[in-house]
Length: 195
Image 1 (cartoon, rainbow, N blue to C red):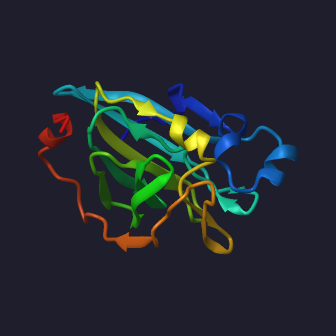
Image 2 (cartoon, one colour):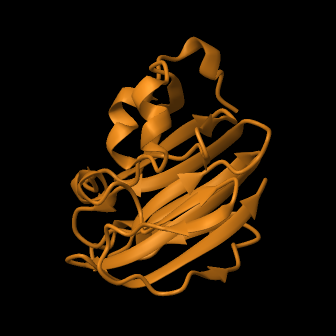
């Protein structure tokens, strides 16, 4: 395991997340909290990069803390594994202001998910404990955050009251749930394919 205490992370704070939070009234007066920490490039092999993200448990007003959300340039996939805590991964496939498909995967320590080609995604910490997760991704894969900022987040928010649809989207299907992988695949070659 990595000694993260001696490494300098990229920090995502509330100011950088204002455009994607559900509870905008809360965000207007809240202090500029540090929301999560990204340790990028801890390992590199076969043109892949290994990162760890740490998301402390907290609320964004009514909403559970989450990542900003992004799409991938190209059709690269990404592999996430929960190292500690629990996570909900929300995946959405979008065309303009319409969502063609959306699903969520609830995961706990040791479980993994693969972000499919063409899907934007958000990671949520729904628990009372810190969430620590790792990801493997192609070095040439870059995140595009623009769409999530423009639409004020993903097509669903996870709040104290449960799932709430984001009305900035024109069409949003019902949310369905899929199962996580019980363990991560050992062959990561698929992450190098830009479909």
